[in-house]
Length: 256
Image (spheres, rainbow, N blue to C red):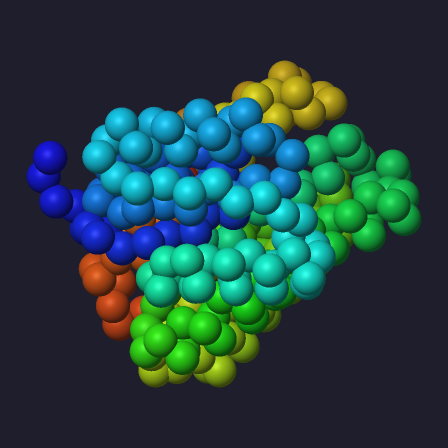
């Protein structure tokens, strides 16, 4: 097999037992990486992805944990660095979009707490635990999955936009803290065609309006967005840290 852009590196992808995380894990393996497949509840999916990675001739480990728990994140970091000796890449893919909330009028405290915990606490704790060990080992890369809602806002779920702003703050703060040995960047997809999105209340009616408002006249998908994760994890982005890359087909073009 041809060596890829991530050849020989170990990558941890959170939430890789389902959805977009599965595609990131597969793409990383196709680019030569060995992958730690993290899951919280989707064990079967995680085991399936790990087997697919091994079939590509790469190594794969499966780890379980709740990223909103600092204790779980610390345990995962300790176990991985002890077992592997090093970790080269972390992709904080786990996120909560408040998919069961169709409108801002349906805001509930439990949904707010869940989104903030998953998107902000989970990203911060995992970045903190893995990143400090990357600094100690002398290098590494962290990629945070954000969203274009930091540009557009979210009238459907304001707490989701607020949480993703938090991810940007985490990205920039740790990019400073971990420099110069560890790079931390984020990318912001727009709407991705996933089962979760298609199951969202009112999506069938909204989809056409979203496509019409996108200059590239289509929606993206998790497999396509996995390419951005590869770019930010690879040496092709070696002079980037603290950056946010918008990937929404032109739907929210911003100035310089």
